Image 1: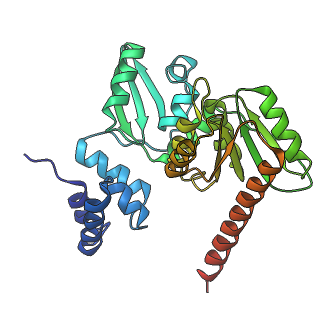
Image 2: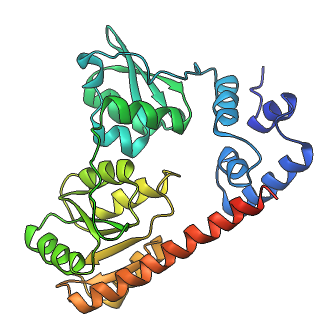
Image 3: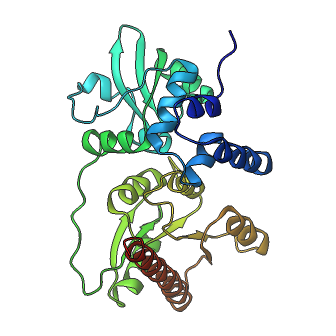
Length: 290
């Protein structure tokens, strides 16, 4: 028996209309994105609708509200916090040689294969919404970051594995009253960004554990922080490098060594953009109730 397509499942459950599906399929032909992602971007379906449809279509167990449960250290240590955040996955249960893994994308067979080889375990995927996964990761992997009380409300996250760069950038920005948070690699930066949801991120590109590009892609995949402007730092000053990073979606580019005047100009531009974005969202939410 042929497996039903996601669109058919959503139609049968009256989650979407035929018109909605036709529009989504037309967009899919243009950008080749997964149908679920397109429907979410069109504000037609919720994350839960997609998770349930994947569960029905492929027979994955659908899990929710698992953040409130207790998990043993033995289970949690199977997945490190870096992998959990970067891929939105969470270990649920270890049964002999099988790891039951909650995933936002249970169709990521490459990730499952890599984990299976690394852990010497069979991976049994379960589908969960990104919000459920982020709640579980925050509760069981991350620690709260105390907010700093500065003169201004703008929080800037600096990510670089060179202390001299962090110190120089921090000194320049603190003079203007910004609250500064620091990380020494992309993995640490991703954890802080997920918890803090800063107003601006400035990151080096080559770094150990997780580089700036890997961190940036993980940030873009997280809707809670996807709109935070990210400025790239790089010792590669050629125009081709700047073009490459801006094409990826970085908000701006600053060449190393950092010039304090140039740094402040780029930061103020990014903060102005973020402030305008907040104001636009506020106006939209106000008029939504009128």
